[in-house]
Image 1 (cartoon, rainbow, N blue to C red):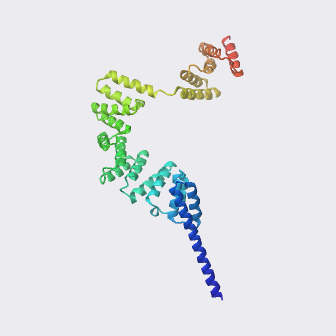
Image 2: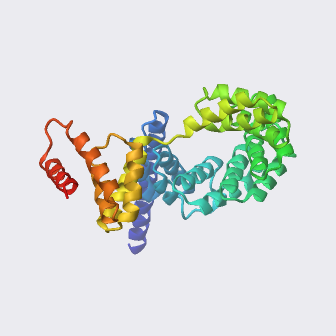
Image 3: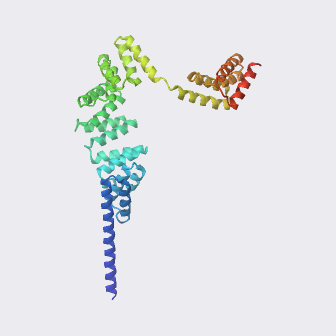
Length: 352
């Protein structure tokens, strides 16, 4: 009798296990179907229902992929956190690289990049992404090594060639940089960045005629709205003796580099107010003057210039500032209580 009961319990356990597995597999199939339709929300619901009965790497990678496509990078990392790297497929490892990059986890980003090219050394995209991380971290020698190692086996990958040219640029290896950008142009990658850097490489190599041609293209591609190619073209045209055209480039570059007056006014005004509150009238005066330079129509700024000047014993400068303030305030149709108070105070100070 006991044997019969034990046998029945085993059968029931097997049935429950089979049912659980069937239910789990059914949820996974439904999740897969939702993924085909880009219904990420419901795909995750089905996958997560299946997870308690199926903790396999395969299912976890499906969940990670869904989180990644939702840009939920933290959860994408977390769901596969305990899995060994050799159990992950190629796409998942790329996703983990991108997740760490998006979350600013620099060392982990580099770690996943190194793991990727160790398993798939001919993955040019991974090599280029890792080299870029090295470059951004100041590890230019490592970036050069991984690019060159790949390039010796495949010189046709434009992603690797592109970052390799940038590495040479960062290392100031102008000949190699120039040759690399020329290779990219031959491959059809005539982007603004490449044309600009090719021009700069020629400039550094003191080949002004070639630099001028490349920089002309970079200026045209940027619709003359970027200062860098104009500045470099100014240097090149000067070397060619075309000083009028050189000065024109420098003037255009300066116009583009001119700061936003509204932003600069706000910054200097904010500095001045903080210094004024701390009774540091000398610094406050300097910054109120800077602020007025960026917004000559500011009504209240000359009032504070007057206060600071007066505190520093500069009576004539103070009176001139108060008069400037009163002239501007007079144009306000309905001055508020605070402005009226400031006007009365300025008049009183002028009359002293």
